[in-house]
Image 1: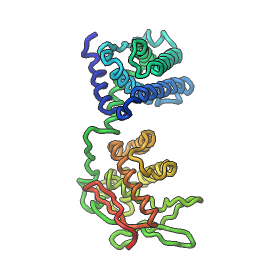
Image 2 (image 1 turned 45 degrees about the vertical axis):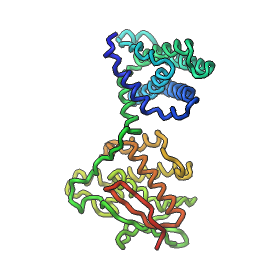
Image 3 (image 1 turned 90 degrees about the horizontal axis):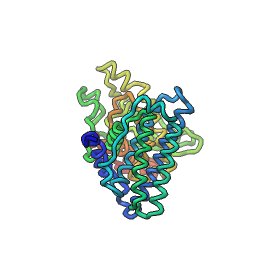
Image 4 (image 1 turned 45 degrees about the horizontal axis):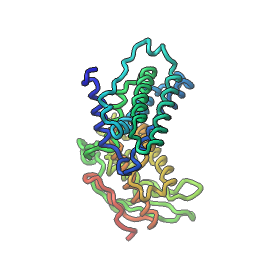
Length: 367
């Protein structure tokens, strides 16, 4: 086989090595990779099952399976690189034909794939770090069965690898560069303010706490309560919207509060700054908060789980903020929650928002 045809695999292996967060676990590295491989194999099989069960009612099958195959490939090439790097140059992809699709049932192929992966994980378990002839033989077997899954599911391994590399660059970039602010080309009155300080004032009205926002001596927005039976301090949640503005350059909610919608462009005003976009942002805030309450409001966490970030990415599809990489969302959320925890602890306070330097910072309690 022409080596150029497998260039994508070698390049993918280099990218995978650069994004391997598990290497820091030392002696457990191989075992963690094996567990990850096993888990991703289950996800691939689950997609095959759902496709058979749902049929035409599951239109996202191909795209979702491509993502799951890409995730599996990542763990596979990492294991090959660690256990038998020379094997990479010997792996070849199976070229699909119409007869291939008709030859075998997809579930049968999927089950054989699952058995091969199970055998690999078991061999690694028995052989400690996994460096043995039996492990290397099963690595080859897993590759053969993965190619068969690729054929019957009509998912290109090369395309799955490319999609996975893009996803990981979105999540863990080598170099960090924030996107330009979306309203840079607009007049100042239609831009989100580049720097401001906001006061979160807690007051009591009719026996319950409410939060009032003040900026430059003026009240902005409505008085907010928790809007839930069991109090959870969600009344301070506008800090999340200011975080979106600071780190993403996007917040339809803040544009509405500060009256800086982009009216000079009717299309942008209606579609990017309108009511539906505000609903999307509020939905993101509520979904993230539900997860945060399970995790001590993200205290002592330096990252978010990928599924949560992926949900956000799905919600903003079709809006300008769709272009923002996941690492920016993660930074916006974690920094905003740091300020939220302080606002909650001190029952309000002052927060600084700086879009130019992409910062949001809790300054002090009420003066």
